[in-house]
Structure formats: structure tokens, C-alpha cells
Length: 183
Length: 175
Image (cartoon, rainbow over the protein chains, first blue to last red):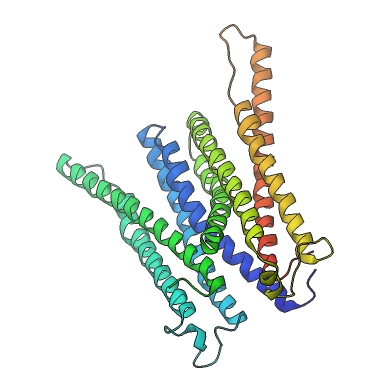
């Protein structure tokens, strides 16, 4: 067993970082390729309830893992000497002129895209999917509301798939850091 | 090539662990609001698919893990923190052994779910069954579900443990 607290912190940051990535990528793959087809095998009304419940819970996982990834990512960079808690915060290895720096900043940029996409899904598209109609609404209104929901669902699916590709790219870039970065 | 191997290895762990977490904390949560008959269908479809995803992911973990070890030279080992070596006299070697044992346990657990516990949950009913036979069949399915739950929990804990052990390898090992 390591005696040094520093080593334990390294291990813990690494573990939490890996768990964050696993939850995001593995969770997204399961939602898309395991729960999605299972949802399609039950009646539409039940499928809608299941979709709503799984998406509600999974969104918590998404925000938790995105937070865990960035926090532990920063802590790991600080631990291995690429960052400081004092100004100018970043060491020479983090400059855009180095492969390592370019790779880390690209990863951060892609992580930000995941955050923006998450915000769009959470605050724009999910409320549209959850919108309920009152009892006295006409057929035109119902059709329009259904159209809005269908469009929102299509966009959620498109964004989720794009997020999966982005997350896999981040994982690829992250793996390359051990050898000095890929860009 | 090293980067691709490491990415495939990390992604395979992610698919396995993320999938197990999703099945446990997302699907189970959604099932609470669903009627029993629909729970059965969803369980069958998602469980059947997930097992194959998990088995393939663990297979990729094994293959890429062995390839990563085989392509790491002695010079690379020496350059790592604590200059680890792949022997039981060194913490790195012992930790690698613990990781391999955990991986084998995970493969056994997932294979047991895929080929034994999941099929055992299917209802075998015949029109001429007596009341006792129906009761026995219900009891059998109940036991199969309980066993599946226990193995799922074990899979989740072992998966998290494997990731923790793997994370410690970068620092020279845990044991």
C-alpha cells in the first residue's frame, strides 16, 4: 500500500476521472443501444413514461460526470505539474505552442461543447418534451404540440449522438496525453 | 498505435462500468413506475442486449490490456513513477495480478448472467400446470431474479474496484 498521501490523491483523482468518463460514455451508449431498443418494445404510452424517467435520471448522471471530469481533470493537471494555483496558473507545457497544451485545450473546448449541448437538452428541449396540454384544447393545437415534441425528440437524439462522438474523441485525446498529446 | 490501444481499453471499461451503472440506477428507477408486465418485457430486452455489450467490452478490455502490457518495453517501465516491474515481488506486479483476477471474476459474473441467470428468468408455463406447479414456477423465477440482483451488485462493485486498481497502476500499484 502506498504510504504517501500524495500518491493516494493521484490514485483517487485518476479513479474519479475514469468513473466520470465511464458514466458519461458508457451511460450514453447504454441509453442509446440498450434502453432505446427496449423502450421501443413496449406500448407508446408506457414507452413515453419510461423515456421520461430514464432521461430525467440520466441527465443527473450527465451533469455529475461532466462536473467530475473537469474538477478531477484540473486537479490531476495540478498534481502532475502542468498547472499552479497561483498566477499565471498554467505552466509552459500548457501553452498552445506545445503538443500537450494544444491537446489539453482542445479537450477543454470539446468538454465545453458537451456542456452547451447538455444545457440545450436540459433547459430547451426537455421542457418541450414534457409540456402537457390542458383538457379543452382543440385538434389543431394538439397536432401542433405533437409536432413540437417530435421535433424536440429528434433534436435530443441528434445531439446525444453528436455528444457520444465528441466524448469518444475526448477519450482518444486524453489517452494520447501519456505520450505527449496528439495535436 | 499505443494511443489507439489505450483508448480502446478505456472505452471498453467505460462501456462495461457505465452500462452497469445505467442498468442499476437508471433502468431500475424507471421500472418502478411501470406495470409489472411491461417491466418483464423491458428487463428481457435490455438485459439480453446489455449482457452482450458487457461481454464484448470485457473481451476488448482483456485483449487490449494484454497487448498494452506486451508492447511496453522495460525502458518504459523503468521511466514510470517508482520504476515498477511485472513481478510479484513488486507492488505493480501484485496490483496487476489483482486486476487480472477481478477481470476474470467479472467475466464469470457477466457470463453467468448471460447464459444462466437471465434465461432462468423466463417463465415456463404450460396450460395443464397444477396450482402447486404454478407456485413452484413463481418461486423459481423469484429466486432467479434475486440471484440476478446479487450478481448485478457484485458486478457493479467489482467494476468500480477494477477501475480503482487500474488507476493505481499509474502510481506504481496498490498492493
